[in-house]
Picture 1 (cartoon, one colour):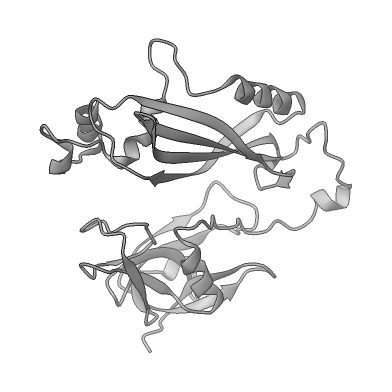
Picture 2: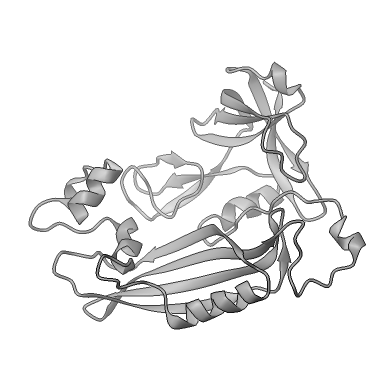
Length: 279
């Protein structure tokens, strides 16, 4: 199974081969998935919760994010067990897709009885926009309120980045061992695997490395067509953001840009890049 996974992912790291091989950490969920035997990773409580939400009109589902924590490597021969828990169900939320509830499940994966890792998976069970749920009692004027930009997912791995944005600082992670820079933020270094890191502040200078123009599908709070740029910062890392200060059809690869911070609404501020800013 490790060999099949590595072939599918194109990962030839030597740690995953030979007599002392370990499993790639991101395989954590694979060991809890159902197979041809009919074994599954869903509990009766999970199915019962889905039935309750379906009955209330929240019949659509979309995955939103997942988090994994690794405590020890898994090796061939380990006996893998897991406990599945419904960790939380949010109050009713309204999103661009519709109104519903975020459901977070947690799997504690054990190797020979020892906790080896944790996998959290979050979905949105919702009634599609324009089709209210059976429990929706919002007044009509609330449904007509102007849509807001989607909120970024903030977790323990990237919270420092968003704290920097709030202080008008674009922070780049720097590996504490090999000094490699990385953006977006990650819990470990992709070059040497070290979990140690600190940050450096970006100068704000950059160029458009690549870009796309979004025409369809339209999303609430966005007004297509608009350009989304892959920006190469002066420090050598890249990030995706909006290019402002120039019409979408005037964005060009190699165009110099300069960091600024855009207040989208009373709660959200985002780093964007203004065209023509070399200073």
